[in-house]
Image 1 (cartoon, rainbow, N blue to C red):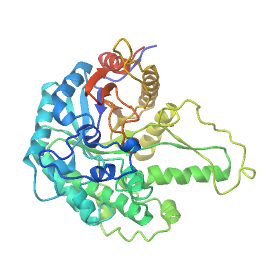
Image 2: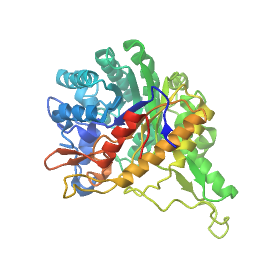
Image 3: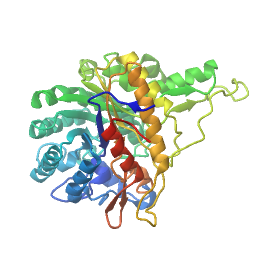
Image 4: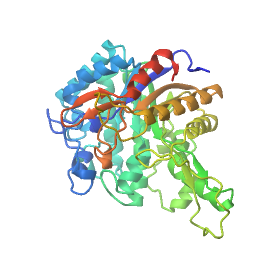
Length: 446
């Protein structure tokens, strides 16, 4: 049976500035925390940097033509904050604004709706030097940046995402240290998470004011946390993990404040929360973006294996090159959970995809059947969520093209389009051709 999507369903792809643009110090662009981090020895696989990446800053016309060839309805991309404001606030780069203005115009000319993410992890280094996201002033600077972007582009851009995955920005950047700026401090991470959300909440009404009729939301990385057994210990561990990854962000965005059990779990004073902050964070949204890649299967560390119940949930042995379990059912589960628990007006899948190794074959083609299977199964799960009543309005595949995969450098390829990083040649993979047919049919096709 043909699995179809509702009329008007939005089909897109997603990228982020640091991962594709390159031109890291051209036309007056300021340094970002990822420029600094990637230039620090030992931080990125193979010593890779985003200095050139996919050279999208110079090749954007070619890339828009490829998007048009795919028949995309929308393109989700991020703005580089230091490309617009080299010091993070104050002085504006005319060249940076012109780049994004020309890109928006080209997309609209190609009948592709621009969907802008304001922050996809590349904080201006100048602001990090003044305290970064743990400092309240960074949230204030973010609102100035959002105001500038929405004033200059809001006449043409009507779909805005404030932040991408604040969990990763805060916890992986300021606690785990695997991402920029590479810190390992719980108090910093919690303050960073709060100020990210606060900057988001403050920016929402500013964007709406500057871009009448715009849809404004935020994109969260969400994943169900499944107990490894029915034991009380595993169920408690899974609920706690859910609180750290999911509820810590979903609850305050939904005017519920921070979940009390996780506040207790962290055991920190939370004295960075000021009067009025939680009300600001809960600014009404037009949609929630859901980034889904995999789930968690959680085993308690409180009791020993011998004391715990036998494991009854075993992950699917099929893994992507990132080592992530392939679990399409988790997309259905998280969409339903978010809708029925939180009731956002609309949902978009703002990222979904997989990394697999592949090269250009002797015939000049790039065959990636595992990615096609991954996308097909996840889209089928999405249709089941829609049938269950979830107001899912669109799907953005991650990613348009192979790119700089953060700490993994260029060693992981998520793209529908293959990029030869030596020549910058682009080749549509089998998955890109398949996705073009999906879009044309508005249905999951073979």
